[in-house]
Image (spheres, one colour):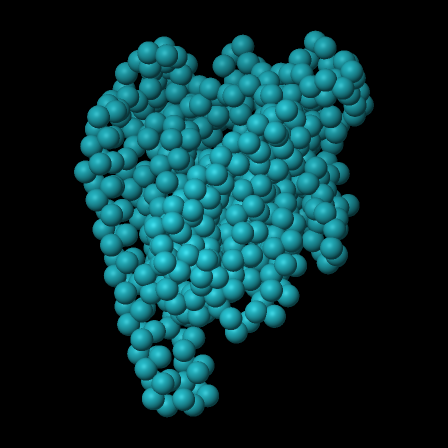
Length: 615
């Protein structure tokens, strides 16, 4: 009988494995035994009180390829007590949301001693991760067998093992049965329907569910723009200057949609219990280093790093580097305009069909170069931000996002602003916007989903052949699953996904008035994006640990900032239009004052909508 993840019972010898822990191949036996004892020991003895066993027993290690892989699980009572310790919020029988406590467990909706679904699998795996990360050094001065790996009281053992290279990775296992059910309702059957956001949250957690919820909402919000833009494009195709009405609609659309999202997001996270969940104390990042000292807040020993040294690194190294990259981006942009001028002169002299096609080549090349520069800069930004030595992961992420957004905004939109407000060439603006938008969408689909999926399928076939070739009398289903998943790529978070939507929002909200089809192409891209991202999460990458989230975080501010820039840009475009200029043939000063007045009146709409939403 084949052993599957869902079929395993919860007794200690054959428990439900939820998390896999991979050790380095040369880890000493005394280190393994010490780690095992700390994981399975009772809480009062400094342990995590989890269930732990090697993937392979002694006989299987002789038969199958020996791997330092271990399975971690937990009893039901351990998970419930962990939910209480973490402050997970659940719905009570009176429909209120409260932090779960084990003593009042019967007051919570759907709780029953025989119900194993009270905690979602994502929550169970998050609790196990929390318990592993909270295994702390007590009297140990070093990791047994490795005197160079120093320990001090209060130090997280898992983080020390990871930074020492003794633990390769820790990742949650997929539940193949639950995953198949999720796939059937999510992306395997193409249909125009809402995503199962609550099921996604139950399997992957709130952070990823919020991303897919935002992707779905943003796609639906683009549909009115696409519906209006299609006839507008068809009937005013040749007149590049008749964009005032569409730009005015852009003003309202970009202002309202983000405030409406806030309300929907709050409804979801309240229902999930994360809106009112207390924020956990944030531990130092694994890569954070400094001189060992006493944290004045927690009283624990931990590395301390002077703030002034970090500020010096930011302002004397990181900031000049970012400015240099911005200058290089502008230099590449000017090369692009030289290429455009060359292609245009060639077409004017020749006038043949192939030269008319050649007019689009500079834009395509520039779009590809932009994507390459964005990816190269991302690696440099990650290195610099890590070198700045931020203590908390949230601070690291905020500095990284700021660096990346500034460069990506200039790199992607500088040429469009230059064409619109310096060259004032609406025909070239339409051509450039269309080429940049479509090319970036195609490249993102290939690089983020199609290529990784093809590589993963190739690896999957190799693993299956390897397992089938083994002369083993045992069932290797679980072994095959774990070995396959451990080689999958690691999901690095929603950063790249939100960044892609941020740039798309910029293309649509800033200049789509001169290319009304931009929203339609964005809708088409997002329909495929939902399926490709779902495929990536389910079949290409390792299952990530869930992370409780109350909102989309700093990305809400990023989108709102882009919305403000959109208001200013569209007001300026309206002021430049021949129709509006014709109303002020003699006094351009009056026109400028009116445009500024419209901007001043439009921007406070953000605050008005926000106040209306809060009522």
